[in-house]
Length: 160
Image (spheres, rainbow, N blue to C red):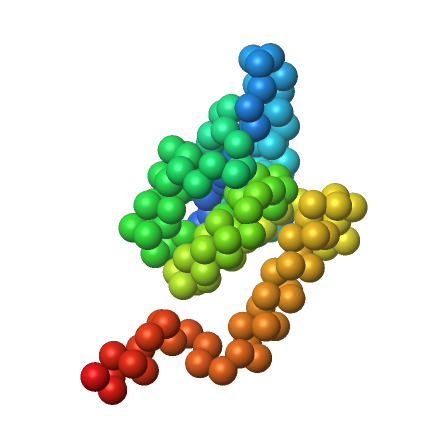
């Protein structure tokens, strides 16, 4: 017999991404990954999300463009239209560089995928606040820029 609970059934599928920076201490790395996993799975439960896969990169800098776990996450999302949310423990787990961050966010948005993390609302993490401010500023700028969404040189190619 199933255990009936008051929690509503999951509304969307999500994936989780975990990353630890370069670290010499294997136990500390394990603890960090487990803390991230716990925070992400708790958030998914709270929001009624069904976790379909967990991706991770261990001993990987957020400034590295190519990370096996992140590359696998991108590929998975590209091939699974049912994934609607990526859950991370904090924004800097995904990227540190602004260019990498913007490219990743554009790819997620193009697939209709949202980003969720425990500090979505009222984060006390300085890195989260900075990323949110940058994202808002860049989003406002791109919305106000003429020719938004057009590839560079597209008007020149048509005229030729």
